[in-house]
Image (cartoon, rainbow, N blue to C red; front, side):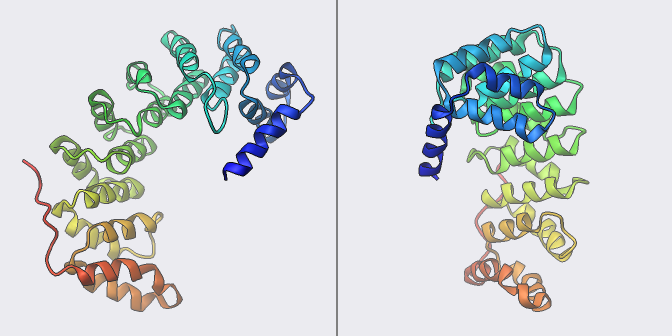
Length: 285
């Protein structure tokens, strides 16, 4: 992978086209794939010239240009970020007074890619935005942070009206950080009865990683729904993370019914077979 990324960087730096030519392509090319390829080339190039051009785009009166500037800055200098501090400063200024939904989305996603705690306050200010697209971008930007403000906001957004926002916020709490607090567990337990299957699966995984016994019955119920599940991998991951002999009957039954797919259950069955007692994971007070 590193060799491939290094080759892409060399390719971008050797390309005879100027920075402004790539920007023109990104702004005017009707083929979305070709337009995005120009953005990727600028990211791999990652020079001061590209940064300055992106900074100017972020200050444009045109929303399309501001969006492009944010898209460039988010992963400028793949795989090693170029000018991350200055890029965060530009993006924070951009988001402070921005009203365009697409620009807000691009800016939050860009901050998420750079992943610096300095971005948390500006992201949190957008947590109540009326657009689910923007709220999802806020969640993306906050995922992976253990700072109290970020965790508190993810807990709030794990109960968002939009399923995609709830899903990613639950994923952020359950799998992207190792923090284990009563508030995090309570937020994950609340999602065990979510109407969205993927959100339930992320909650199961998060609680299984924390060895919380409250997932036992919900996990058995989700296993019994096989093979209708949209994200069956999450249910099996939870079973592997929560090795409990009480899961063996349903796992064994599923394995026998699966035929050629029986290997899907092997790891979970092996771990549960080796568990001679339920895991010590009582809910924290």
